[in-house]
Picture 1: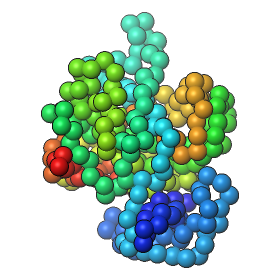
Picture 2: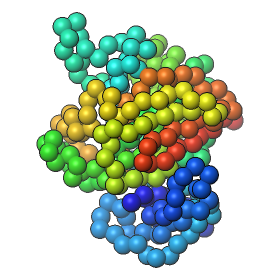
Picture 3: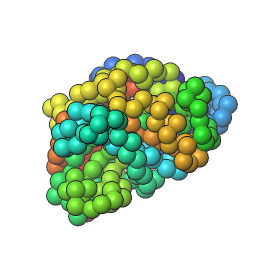
Picture 4: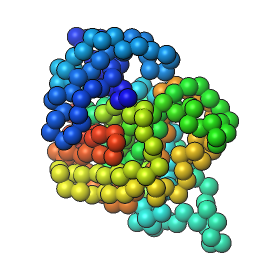
Length: 268
Ligand code: MG
């Protein structure tokens, strides 16, 4: 099931997306409004609205977004890093937070930050947590995941390189586009992940190239902190990151999910 969050007539609701998501056919999509919330047992109301008549919102409002750095070896290499130490052992995963205020939905603008001159896109598969959990064993990870969506870990690369912690470089307002919806029936092990800017391909990878699996990441993160329903884990970006300029339209497409599209605007 594809679960979208949207606003209609000033109200916020969740809906199950019905219809084809083939490129160009998005106007045909319909939302069956959900009674309740997707983090508990819910029913479809049977009340349907065309997707084109609503404003899509971020599919969740996470309490926290936990992101993982250098989870694709080729991307680590393009920034001059390795995922293994000098004895060939895997480095521990890099984890960092993006605040809830960084989250925007598909169609929302990314505002170019005033303190950067080198904004980058990072297409990533996002894991949406479905239930409160901690110290999740590997074999239970599937039980705590509601589904998957597309993310863009938008990064002020120059700020990331000159500041030791990445809170500003990766946590500014609108630096975490998520969407367009959550796909709940998906095997995330080997999906194409792509980023285009103004229609031109910049990133193309497969989730099977992750250094750490989704299971390993959930185990690692939940060892340290309680994950809440709606929390999001960003799983790292494949090679091909590059600059975004004001006016660009950046799109992240993940096989089996859909496309997250955002335009970069100047700070007003
Ligand atoms: Mg990233």
